[in-house]
Length: 167
Image (cartoon, rainbow, N blue to C red; front, side, top):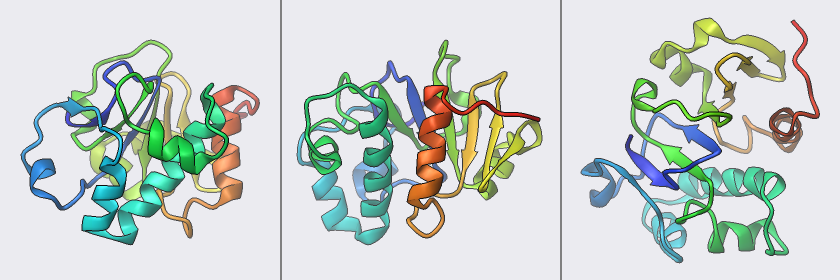
C-alpha cells in the first residue's frame, strides 16, 4: 500500500495520482505526514493538491472526534498524520488489505473504472456510487467543482450511517 496517512485507517481515499515531488515518486509504503507537510506540498505543487487536502479535511472534520475548532486547523494539525485514522492511497486498489468496517472512497468515476471497481457499485445519486458489501464508495474527484459541499454532506451522511442506500 502506497500513500500517506495512518496504517490503521477507518477511511481511506484512493486517488489516481500523487504529488509531483521526488519523495512521492519513490514512495513504496504508507507514510504518515508530519505537521507542515501539507503546506509544503501545496507550496510545491499548487492549487490542485490544496483542493484535495481541503476537501479531505472537510470530510474528516465532520466524521472525526477532535478538539480543533475549524476544518482548517484539522487539516494543518491532524490530517494524514500518525494516529489520525485515515489515509490517502496512491497505489492500486487491489493492494489494499481488508480492513473491517473501513470505508474506501475512490475519488473519480474514471479511476474507479480503471481499478475495476465500478462494475460492482450502484448509483446512489449526485455522482456518488456505493458497494455496501465492500464498503466502497465512488465519488466525484476531490475538486470543488466536482465534489460540491452538497455532495460532500451526502458522503458524510452516508459514512455516518444517516443515509441508507435504497436500490
